[in-house]
Length: 288
Image (cartoon, rainbow, N blue to C red; front, side, top):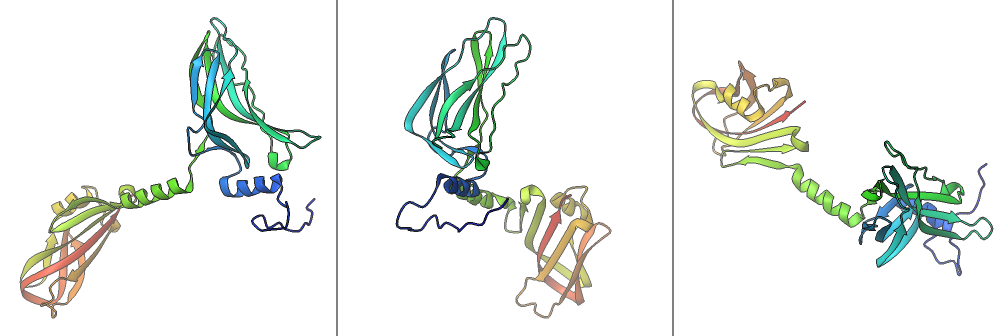
């Protein structure tokens, strides 16, 4: 049943201690996420096999359902793996174990190894305890590594955690992504071709001079050139075309629409011309 309580200004002065570990955990879940993460930085809980009975885990910052848990820089812990069995396979799971003492309410974390069951066939993972700290669970295990033993030997150490990137890294990656969103394929004095959205949109823009002799239209591009731009199987329903008068001196030449007729692209004018006309154009094609 919901209970009404006064709110807590966590980041404000209250003339004494006023923020609980529960509130900090909830705030961290709201900002970082509700699950278990290794946060970016340092060696990020890197594992190194020392022997078939020992694995070293280096420094890292964990966030275990909102509880931040820090192994300082240059720190490490060696965890012990039980002996394997000849001709048997086994999976062990290294966990970061959270506990809360029910009487004292003191919370602690430690590394632990959950030993799997040896098998002559395919090894299966042992059970990892998943608790809901937000709801008051006193035991929760964050799976870090699956240690695979074949006979007496450790044959693989497989990460089972997610590394959560920090805001500085994300900002850098977003900036790089934005810079790559537009990919210039061809750029010369006549036209430029570039793509958006991973190639889903192709844009061709440029300027071209055409001689118009006694007609009110001119062929801008033939069907082969359009196919060169957008592919042999292009559909006219997916192509949007805009054209503009590119000559400052040809102000009396009014441009009408451009259209594809019998596979060729034509530009139409409001009157018959007998001169050269510069046509600026922009064609946008959206692929399925």
